[in-house]
Length: 278
Image: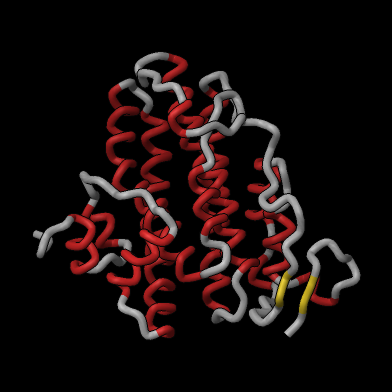
């Protein structure tokens, strides 16, 4: 077992994938972060699951903008207006910026997992970086840039609350907050189509396809850790949601996407508050 500070250039383990993940997480420029994540030849790097990394100040690295506010402080604009359209695309861009950070954090923070765990979450980071770039480029076509509108920090707030327990992180970030995207994306896509934004809708098609895989990654590793600890996945999820004050999820739910992402019928029944899922 080794203990490493990511900013020490003399470390022999500097080339490990987990060290790279932490270094990239510290970058404040999200576009540079996305580019670096997608460019890194991760398959050629060792992982070193036993490595204990020291968390530096400044996790995660963020740009100076957007201004972060409470969700209730965000203005609700009609998507039919120019500003409302851009604001919606900006909100989606911010979600993907956070998603890059969440995936990188999952790689560096949690030690002693199988090699496949780290490779899986790195691949998630790569895909989230692509999503960010697609949305940011689309935002530019609307005359705006990432940072032009305020945003909230709900995704990273839950990551912070679950930083001491991998099982809680898996339960409440990919399987709760990110899974909400599976439910919300079809309605957002419909809104974009309604105003003629076919390019934005096409980006959401890519994101929904990939996010099913990302939530599936969360489900797979949540089930694995529950099995390792001898815990029931359904009752454990409810306990973790209460302990960490997770948001209560409300329908309508995209049951087809959730099933494709690996949620069991028992889990979906518990989510919907019904004895069985049709």
